[in-house]
Length: 402
Image (tube, rainbow, N blue to C red; front, top):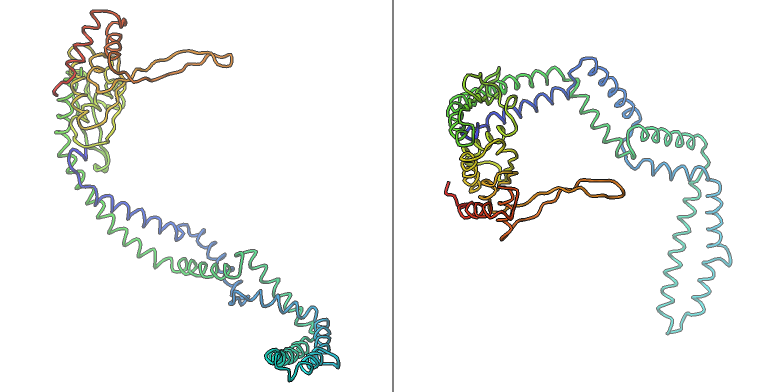
């Protein structure tokens, strides 16, 4: 219908897409008051729990881990620092040994540069010794602080268990929850704004729907007549097709009604048409329309017809094939003959693993085999002289000018 009438559906599609977006936004806000209240309570609890924990630094756990290690082994750290400082500074320690090394090399020209390096090394070791002493003295036993650090780490682990793999994830969850909470708490304001938008878009949608309906209603009689005119050559001479635009929303409800025989009331095509009638009606529709899918498949389109009607059917398919790629399942020689390429389909029963199975196969038909197949379709005997003459005539005249 819309292809035939060149209906502009874009305004209607855009309006309906916008309505869908607005309805989704309203639903996301929490349309059910009780559901919304429960979500608000949960979000408030979660936000308060994270804020109450005072989380602000994503690296806090790393710092606490280092501090706990220091506090938990403060005495050992101090003793280690003291031993290190003594090893450096005592008589016979590292500094004394380096001094002796310098004294042995001093005033010897080949070692002048190395002596300078050793003196620099003494300065660095002395500096390191001072820092080791300072750090060791800072390692004091503080059971109270150690307990606080462990409790804090446990609190942070609990937050991560609930809200994310890392503190970064926990803080991201906090941001999301605060945003969602603000949305829910400002529900009335947002709903009012969205509902105003919806009223405006709904009016636009109705206006666009009416415009589409008007175009469809105007084109319906012409489309029905055009389809009917082609059915006459497809063995449905007395059939009449009517296009009816009905329903509460006339832009949406389009019915194709068929009167198959004079005196019978029209009824929906989908309910009363046989498989062959459906296929022929589809063929008639495609003959009316110049655009459409690039590939069309027809099955049973020639059911129950023969003679002149079969020739007319073949001509119609040949004409349609100039605009589309067409596949036709047919038992009529007239229809098969006009095809650019024939494919023979056969079935056979074979035994596999002790069981009979049916196999279908398809083989391209070319050259003289085309005459064989058309003759077989005509008489059931591909070697019949009369059938072969007729088959050749059909193939030679297959360049039908629609």
